[in-house]
Length: 359
Image (tube, rainbow, N blue to C red; front, top):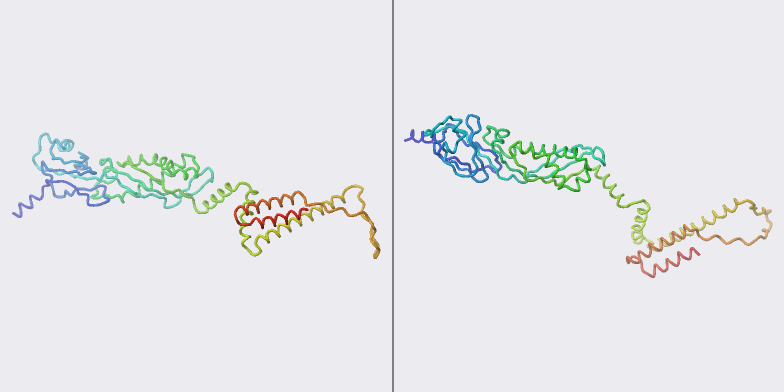
């Protein structure tokens, strides 16, 4: 009985794969010292395909289903075996199973920055990362080009090849599109479509089909990103005059909370207006001295009484610049009233004080 059991075990009646490994793409059914019985049952489950290989030659492929192995169901193998009629004896053949289910959430990214030529920034180095998904669709091509005679071929065995292909596709996309980095980063969906055009032929050549490709982020090195942020900030601020006004308006509420508060601000503004008026008067006197026919007053002897002369002309009023400054200050203070930072009573007092300086 032991001898009969041993002989019986040399023949295979049922061929199937339960896909025990979670990330297995290709699996070789164990056939060492075994032969397939005529009429054996082949079961190919959903999301699987099976291929028979005879002495290194690709033969018949099977989609999901249950098959009885005969010359009718194995036409290519029958031809390779030179079977001209129904075979009744067992035969040897390699059987490979392939998992065709979708491989999700495969990550890709640039381990090191890649250098590209950008229209706005010149030569820059950028990083990018995202996810993609794919499935095995042509087991014959995959066996011939990728998995070969290995007993098991996993998803991880393929990740490095696919990830490097993504990086090459990004470089090619930037090089051929002439689209600035800012536009690419601002529309990642269109960028992913452009990358996909470069990637899909490689997947097809390996017997795979790319299902989806997502670009999650495109970024510049930190130092370039800081320059970009500065440039964006200046574009938002506009000219320097507007920037100065913006900074001044922000400084007033801060100063109001310091010692002296708005009273200190008002005093400083008033002093500034007074100094401006004195400078304007001095400039007017200097200009008058330069006019033709102007005579300087005679020198006085030591101890002598001053010579009566015409009454001094009144000091000129503050110039237009001083007036503009006062009006601008009043507008800012009035804005603080609207924000609730300054009361109406405080505003009226400061207004009277500033206008008095112009009198």
